[in-house]
Image (cartoon, rainbow, N blue to C red; front, side, top):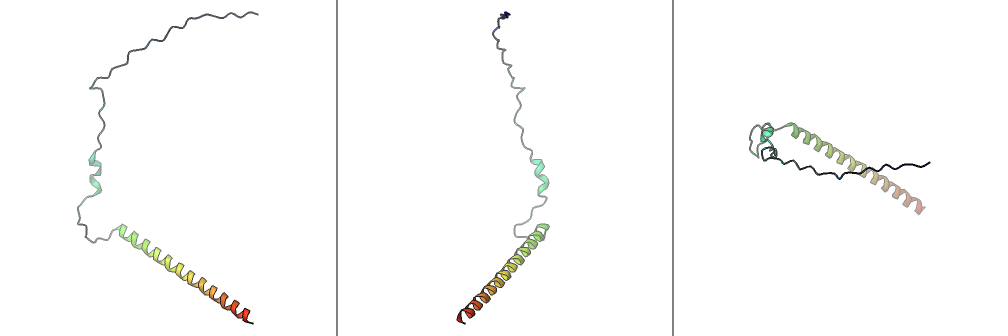
Length: 97
């Protein structure tokens, strides 16, 4: 069984000329609109003005939670230290007998 090889000539690929863009077709970079930020701050207020807002209430609640957690940890630490003192006192008492 003989196989025939087909001989085909490949033609070299020709380069297509690059499409030239005209200056009118080039897109200019888009500018960010400042109008989207207009509604963020509606009124000007002085820096030292006192005004209670939702954020003020959030910070007060958060601060109260942190202070209560700290007081609770201090009480736990004091109770643990009292237990250690009782254990030391009982061990001294048992060693003297």
